[in-house]
Image (cartoon, rainbow over all chains, first blue to last red; front, side, top):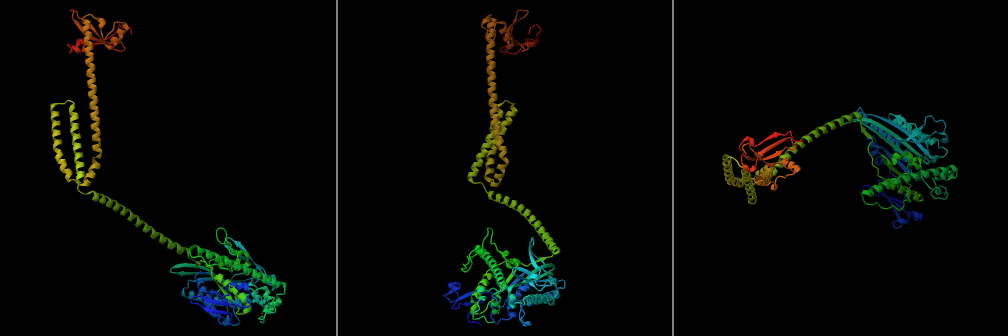
Length: 256
Length: 376
């Protein structure tokens, strides 16, 4: 834990204090120079030791359970380059460090299986799509007809407005029955993302990735047939940073 | 990692990439700010005003005429995730920051962005609906229940309105059911007296015209009865209940009124008849006087002094048309005075004895005869 960020756990919400370094840009912190720190309040603050599981349980689990009742949900990962967005959403090297997407799929299908075993009349339809926005162009990471590995040659997904809302043309949506199929699609898309960017390793944070799960279900609740439709979006935003800092080779903490 | 950046940032493509990333993140932030302004505005309308945020870019949440304009269409990212950002969707942001002093400004920017995201509030509902057949079943049963309820309410209403009417009548009767006050008794007695006076008067009025002695006797008896009934009526008034009085007055109202009106008209009619009769008598008297004078004049041979006739032929004709006095000499030389007149079409002549000479002695003294010799 670096000394310039302090976590102050509140009772219901969490507070983070950013201690202003002495050489900070005065324009940024002019209002808070008296206290010497910037205070922000969030629903929850995790420290560097927090595990993926803790984060998932706190951030997404309740919302994912709500998806089965028909509530849509979206999780964004936002932050500067190298701060761990992709790690949060996609996960790390091993099973314990898997990120929000595989955990979400795990929860969803476990719950769906449970529901199915409880009420046999319960049926569902689960669809998955995986897209990426690179330089203001949407690409389908799961396009099966793709032949080229050069991103510029991919067929872009077109956004069309219609009476019923946004229509995504050229986007493939895959029906999945179980967790394995879903994870397979996820890894496939993730691989595409990485393999197409071998030229520069950090390109993963140079595009916005959107993993979407569409869920439609039909169940019986107190003698009534109930239809639900909901959507989960898991978004890995590209890293934001200032150009001047990137260009600054003299920065003392530039070592990887 | 950052060394990589440094090397790559020198290429043109890298700069372009970074530009598009920062631009789309900027537009995302703008959308969040617009949504937050919307939330704060909604809160302001109902709750306390929000605290100002000095760090906000000016004019970021532009207001259009009807509400807040959210600039979703500025970038592909926000356009694609439109439903997730401001629509019917639970959204959460996981913010990643680096605990290094060199990235302090980015950390501040990230936290500030997160803070703004946290201030956005959207209403969410579950996208679930009941199957149509079940909905139909449920609604049908609901409608049936409501119909039943409605019929019950209708019945209740009818029953209650009947009860209400009864109750109202009862209350009116109760408030009026009491003995008469002294004042009311006096008024009632006066009323009775007046009525009796009217009745008596009407008997008197009718009795002015002549009738048989039996009839006169009947009237006298009726008057006696009326006089006797006054005491009895007074007793009744003293014992009378207010409600009875009210009912009685409404029932008798028309009758009494018509009685009074009748009395007035009868009085007027009788007075008019009396006047007419007197006038007729006077006229008859004047005519008799005139004829008597004329007859005397004629008998004494003084034709020039006649009041009721003239000597000129036309005048004579006019006179005869009106009726003039002539002397008829009988075969025995007896003089009979006759009033002779000719009908207006000069076709008939009538004669009659003078008014003053009393009753006709015989049929011959009056009669009519068709005239054929006159040149009309």
